[in-house]
Image (tube, rainbow, N blue to C red; front, side, top):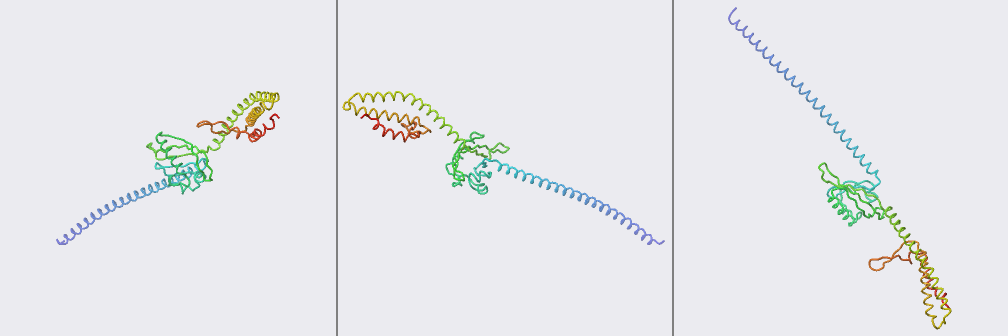
Length: 303
């Protein structure tokens, strides 16, 4: 075989070996690339699954939080007592419907974001100043605090309320606001005043009864003695004096009649710092007693 033929064969064999080596190398690179793409696809799928899981968890968390807030709002609105929340700057951050409607006569949207001093038509400045002063006292105490105040309600009535205040604290134990619950004391205070008036009236009636009992007998005796004395003496000698004495006795009888007719407790000033019972206004027989005192002496005076 000629030499050039061997050269051609050798070149063909070399080219074939090189091509084989090149193809194997490319095949190996292709397999590596395919393996890398498979790993990347698996990673992407895993990341997508994790993302979907996080989104589902976030959605469930938001749903639970939204449900909790709705439950909390429903519970607050179920409580019959007025309730409101303020932040550390004294700005309303929430309240229940009872506070909004019955106390201020506004909607919750009209209240949230405002300070008490910004609502002078609903919260008088003196009451708003009382709020601030009591909040400062609570801050100094470092815990719950309560006070009583009269509130002008949305229906125009003035009612007595007990304000029970408590600080709202974050996990760092710093006060970030205040929650206040109002308790209506109007009927309780009225009952206490009525009970006190009744107790005072009972004491007055017992004292008046004892005075009248002890006073009437000597008064009747004195009146009888004066009438006998007036008959025995000449009218010219002591008539005018006897008439004045009998008039005073009738006046004393009128006072005892008023004491016996006391039906309620009412006082009048006596001196600078003292009060005494006003028997004229406290007795139903006051007017009758006055008429009796005015007309009695003339009818009973000796002729």
